[in-house]
Image (cartoon, rainbow, N blue to C red):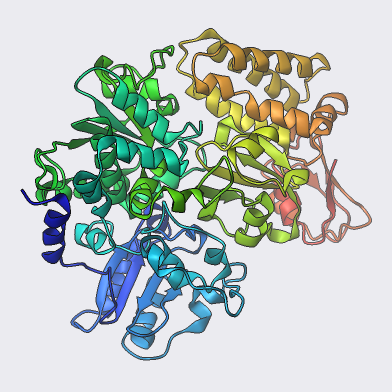
Length: 636
């Protein structure tokens, strides 16, 4: 019998990569991901196809999102022997011009390229070291883009192929080393050796809890019972988070390969990917990846000719946030209502249909093939002593460069916000960053130099979470932010346990009173007591962490709560019930613009004379404040 490595080599010889590998002719790559499609990328792709019609001297391919979501649609031009060029904000007209001048001609348009974008295009210092050739499978992206400051500060392991290969082509994935880690495991490593490599790497679960991945695999391997199952948790539900979606849309085969490796290691023959139905493009590309891998003999009843059996299925979630909790997720796969159950027993001992089951999220799994090929020592050399490797973040909110980034553990919050994120737009000041999504905490300015790792964030009163990172400027009301996140978690509570169901509801009622100007001194103590009770007694992580945004903002921004309760004032002017708009008589020029935009006609005044606002009629929409050309309207 041929080894798995030999079988894979034969599969690779028969492969025909679309865009991966050496550039032998001009190539045009258009980013087609959810963020890109929202920005009009399909029209851009159609325009490129039309402009290139009949010209066979250049190839056209689709890739995932490279992370610069705010610059979509993106269009990359590759030519033999030339630096790759990334064009930004490419509408159909711009796309046709790029094809004419750059692809077909020899006149790159510098002003439209990513280098011209302030905050992203800053060039790396002269003599910056090139990535090591031994790490080609993860340095490929960096080699092309390390000249740009935005990418130079990143280390891409999970996202190593996103934006570099056609996600719908298994041949592209094979061309960049895909499925070589699986073949190595099946040909050279015992099940225990695979688990030991993952253990020694220090990889921890990227879904939020940070549990050692190799230890979880060991528990499933050692648990008695057959059959065993492996599950990928792709039920990404945090507001503002899109790490898993982008990975699945840009590199689905890496997750398929990792699940096959995990299945071999723990002794499973069947696996599931549980993904939200709201991710149609990710679901479609996963479906294509599974079909292609099955057709090539990489999945099925004889994986790579070794006799090992592994079959993979997709299960769609209905959008319940609580199904991100592993026991609720398993219940949903079984066809039951997605509600958590008490643990122990843990899924490693009793999971799907009462059988041993291993669960990891998308980002955790996407690291595994690189770890197997490059070794535990390589991976553990990245990051901090207790937090190894890299972390993917969805960078959102009041920051210049919104999008997806992957940085080594231990990088500081300041580096992420200012060096990669480009700082706060509009000349405003940084106020806080919310890490960990609706279950996380808010970190104010004094924590800007805090290293981003599991232990440091916990010590600062926040959590790593799955990777949502929302930046807030000095115009953000922290009481309103706490109410926003608690509204989400209260709405998503499954209702099974009283501390979560009732505790979050009562907390939300208190916050609503405070933001409506009806708060009282005892409300702060009520919030603390209710939050502590929910943290201690809730059945699952949703209820246990739901009070975090409230308690952390109370701890870090007590003066804002005091202002709302004792002064009937929202310092940032966000809570409309506590805001009054007044016209400064000395500044008003009587232009009448405020009067014309007022929806309730509460502004009166003669032309070229100071105007007045009737506070009793004003609905505090802020339209006049935004429209005034001389800043004559003040918030009180």
